[in-house]
Every structure is written in structure tokens, then in C-alpha cells.
Image: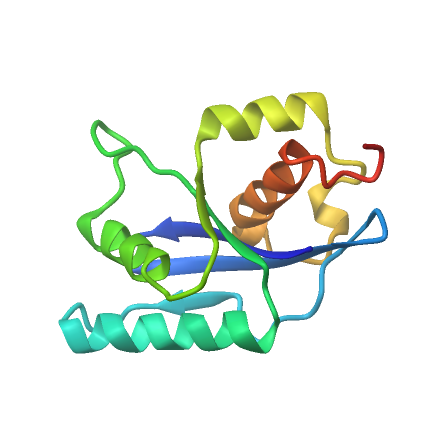
Amino acid sequence: MKVFGVDLKGNEATLCLLSLVDGVFHIPDCRTRRLTLADTSAKGLKNFQSTFAKLVADYKVDAVIIRQRQSKGKFAGSAIGFKLEAAIELIADLDVVVLGTTEIKESLRKNPLAVPFSETGLKQFQEPAFITAYAWLMKNNYAPDH
């Protein structure tokens, strides 16, 4: 199983490609770590969507796991972030899951990371996307010990 973990902040989608093969986690190389929406018009959103869809196709991703953001309050996601989420969710034939922070915390409590994040080789800004993908794989019994 190969998934993209996605963390949306402002006009950026931070990505982490994570796969589970024969009970072992792998972090395959990916040609991009972030996708930025420079133009918030319909044309810009379609361009973002097609770029994201191309990444998913090129890496043969089975699912996209998006870290859920708050819709209200001090830490609420931006309107542009919700547009990005919708653009990803509307990609044809793509399994998209929005994973809440409570579910992520519960999954990590039951299945802590085996190695510190600093040893994964990923950039620090990719940590929320990585944690999201890892938590979903563990929550859905794709874990090596299940």
C-alpha cells in the first residue's frame, strides 16, 4: 500500500510519500515535497489539481490522507486551504481520506513511531504529512504486527 500524507497550510500542500511493503515501511523518493497554489482562480485550481493527479498516477498511490484542519477558531484553516482540499478530493478515481487529529493521536498512542522523525530523512516541514500517513496506515491495520 502506498499513500500520500498531505498537510494543507495557506496555499501550500506539503506531501509525504509513504509505503508499506511486506510489513515494512518505506519512504520512497518523491520529486516534490510541496505543491503551491500561486493563482487562486479556477484555472489555477485546475492546474493544481492536474499536477496533484499526475503525481498520484506517476507514483501509483493507492490513497491520499489529508490531515483535517479546524473550520473555526484560532487555528482554523484558510479558505484557500479548503479549496485545495476540495480540488484533491474531486480527482476522479482517487481514494481520499480526511483524518482528524483525534484519530491521529489515538493511532500514534497505540502504535508509536519505531524511529525518531529526525532519522527518516524527511524535511522537518514534512512531519505533519508523514505522521498523518503513518497514523492512517496503522489505524487501518496495515501495520507489520497485525
